[in-house]
Image (cartoon, rainbow, N blue to C red; front, side, top):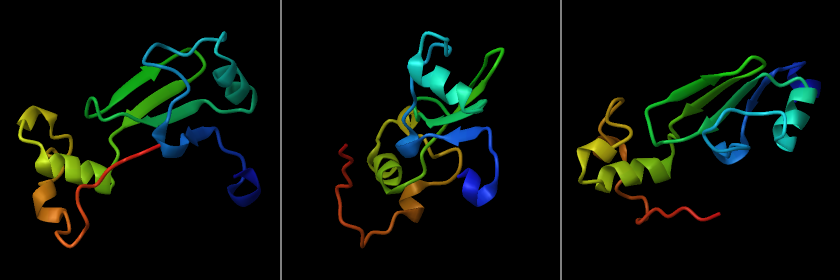
Length: 109
Protein backbone atom coordinates (compact mmCIF):
# COMPACT_ATOMS: atom_id res chain seq x y z
CA UNK A 1 0.00 0.00 0.00
CA UNK A 2 2.83 2.37 0.75
CA UNK A 3 3.66 2.80 -2.93
CA UNK A 4 0.05 3.89 -3.55
CA UNK A 5 -0.91 5.94 -0.50
CA UNK A 6 2.27 6.47 1.46
CA UNK A 7 3.20 5.06 4.86
CA UNK A 8 0.40 3.65 7.01
CA UNK A 9 0.31 2.08 10.45
CA UNK A 10 -3.20 0.62 10.05
CA UNK A 11 -3.97 -2.89 8.80
CA UNK A 12 -7.46 -4.07 7.86
CA UNK A 13 -7.11 -7.83 7.78
CA UNK A 14 -8.04 -9.54 4.50
CA UNK A 15 -11.44 -11.18 4.89
CA UNK A 16 -11.45 -9.81 8.44
CA UNK A 17 -9.26 -12.65 9.72
CA UNK A 18 -7.22 -11.81 12.77
CA UNK A 19 -3.79 -13.17 13.69
CA UNK A 20 -4.85 -14.36 17.14
CA UNK A 21 -7.86 -15.12 19.29
CA UNK A 22 -9.45 -12.55 21.62
CA UNK A 23 -6.50 -12.48 24.01
CA UNK A 24 -4.09 -9.53 23.81
CA UNK A 25 -1.31 -9.68 21.26
CA UNK A 26 2.05 -10.72 22.68
CA UNK A 27 5.59 -10.72 21.38
CA UNK A 28 5.60 -14.52 21.21
CA UNK A 29 3.07 -14.28 18.34
CA UNK A 30 5.32 -14.33 15.24
CA UNK A 31 2.65 -12.72 13.03
CA UNK A 32 2.17 -9.82 15.42
CA UNK A 33 5.91 -9.43 15.85
CA UNK A 34 6.36 -9.29 12.05
CA UNK A 35 3.56 -6.75 11.50
CA UNK A 36 4.77 -4.62 14.39
CA UNK A 37 8.29 -4.65 12.88
CA UNK A 38 6.74 -3.38 9.62
CA UNK A 39 5.29 -0.40 11.49
CA UNK A 40 1.69 -1.44 12.05
CA UNK A 41 0.10 -0.21 15.27
CA UNK A 42 -3.65 -0.35 14.50
CA UNK A 43 -5.19 -3.76 13.76
CA UNK A 44 -8.77 -4.15 12.47
CA UNK A 45 -10.57 -7.47 12.15
CA UNK A 46 -14.17 -8.59 11.62
CA UNK A 47 -16.08 -10.19 14.46
CA UNK A 48 -19.87 -10.19 14.61
CA UNK A 49 -20.01 -11.73 18.09
CA UNK A 50 -20.56 -8.23 19.49
CA UNK A 51 -21.40 -4.82 18.01
CA UNK A 52 -17.73 -3.97 18.41
CA UNK A 53 -14.83 -4.46 20.74
CA UNK A 54 -11.50 -2.77 21.28
CA UNK A 55 -8.25 -3.73 22.90
CA UNK A 56 -5.37 -1.44 23.71
CA UNK A 57 -1.89 -2.70 24.40
CA UNK A 58 1.18 -0.63 25.15
CA UNK A 59 2.24 -0.82 21.50
CA UNK A 60 -0.99 -1.42 19.55
CA UNK A 61 -4.70 -0.72 19.26
CA UNK A 62 -6.98 -3.50 18.07
CA UNK A 63 -10.56 -3.12 16.94
CA UNK A 64 -13.23 -5.52 15.70
CA UNK A 65 -16.13 -4.52 13.53
CA UNK A 66 -19.23 -6.19 12.12
CA UNK A 67 -19.04 -7.30 8.52
CA UNK A 68 -21.58 -5.65 6.26
CA UNK A 69 -21.97 -7.92 3.26
CA UNK A 70 -24.53 -10.15 1.56
CA UNK A 71 -23.83 -13.03 3.90
CA UNK A 72 -24.43 -10.96 7.04
CA UNK A 73 -27.54 -9.36 5.50
CA UNK A 74 -29.00 -12.77 4.71
CA UNK A 75 -28.17 -14.19 8.15
CA UNK A 76 -29.84 -11.23 9.84
CA UNK A 77 -32.87 -11.47 7.59
CA UNK A 78 -33.54 -15.14 8.40
CA UNK A 79 -32.54 -14.96 12.08
CA UNK A 80 -35.53 -15.46 14.38
CA UNK A 81 -33.71 -14.67 17.64
CA UNK A 82 -33.58 -10.86 17.95
CA UNK A 83 -30.48 -11.06 20.16
CA UNK A 84 -28.56 -12.66 17.26
CA UNK A 85 -29.44 -10.02 14.69
CA UNK A 86 -26.17 -8.15 14.31
CA UNK A 87 -27.33 -5.38 11.98
CA UNK A 88 -30.59 -4.34 13.64
CA UNK A 89 -28.84 -1.47 15.41
CA UNK A 90 -28.26 0.02 11.94
CA UNK A 91 -31.25 -1.07 9.85
CA UNK A 92 -33.72 -3.89 9.19
CA UNK A 93 -31.92 -6.36 6.89
CA UNK A 94 -35.23 -7.57 5.45
CA UNK A 95 -35.88 -4.08 4.10
CA UNK A 96 -32.51 -3.95 2.35
CA UNK A 97 -31.86 -7.49 1.14
CA UNK A 98 -32.50 -7.86 -2.60
CA UNK A 99 -35.13 -10.58 -3.03
CA UNK A 100 -33.78 -11.25 -6.55
CA UNK A 101 -30.51 -12.42 -4.99
CA UNK A 102 -30.03 -16.20 -4.97
CA UNK A 103 -30.51 -17.73 -1.54
CA UNK A 104 -29.38 -19.22 0.67
CA UNK A 105 -26.27 -17.11 0.81
CA UNK A 106 -23.44 -19.36 1.99
CA UNK A 107 -19.91 -18.60 3.02
CA UNK A 108 -17.07 -20.99 2.35
CA UNK A 109 -13.35 -20.55 2.86
